[in-house]
Amino acid sequence: MARFVGRENVRKRLAPLEGAQGRTSYADGAARFELPGEVIVVRPPFGLEHEHDYDTVRLAPLLEALAVDHVVAALLVRLGGYAVGVFDGERLVASKVGSRFVKGRHKKGGSSANRFRRRRDEQARALIEEAAEVAAGVLKPWRGQVEFAALGGDRGAVREVLAARAELGWLAELATPRFFTVREPRRRELERLPYELYSAELED
Image 1 (cartoon, rainbow, N blue to C red):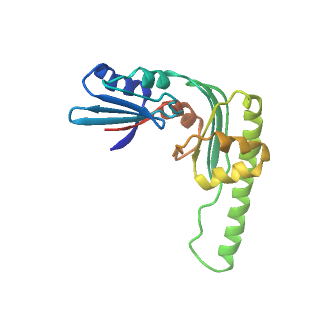
Image 2: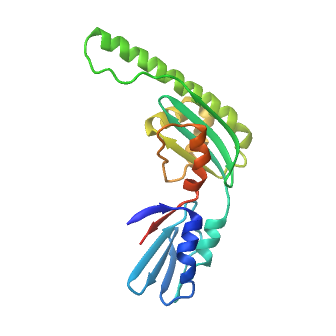
Image 3: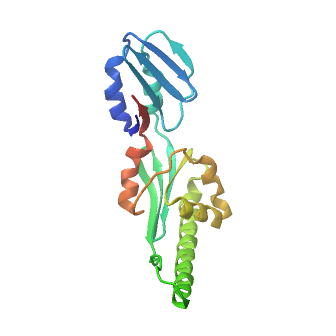
């Protein structure tokens, strides 16, 4: 079963296996360890360039990849709020969060529903535009340093924010494969994000 595990926990889980009987294969961004009665596959969050096969359990290339810190831009958006940040390793070095009220969906029909929908659309558009403006301002000074982008919240809202400002297009190009689910984009979510950013996908 695949799950995301913090990089330090991955190290603790696998370190005792170094040099054990088995086979190791590094390929396609993943490390595969074949042990008697067990197979473990680990995919680091920011890729794994090393490729080689070993006739024993060889952990060094994987652990080295997991230990590397990166500069990561984060954009978390849901209808109701947004959070923008830049991480240097696990340290949050720039950030800004905001919120705007967006009405929930209207369940009744008729003209009142149409007015409600128009109002809701106006509120959502205002939020998207504000989030895009803030993201552009916070991230612009870091564009030349950012290596990866972490996107999260609601996929549709994030797409709209990226489309709202041409200067945000580079975020999609640097986005990690993992989309981060957050219930409310707030500063506390940004502060918790490093653990998830550096978590590896582990199958065992």
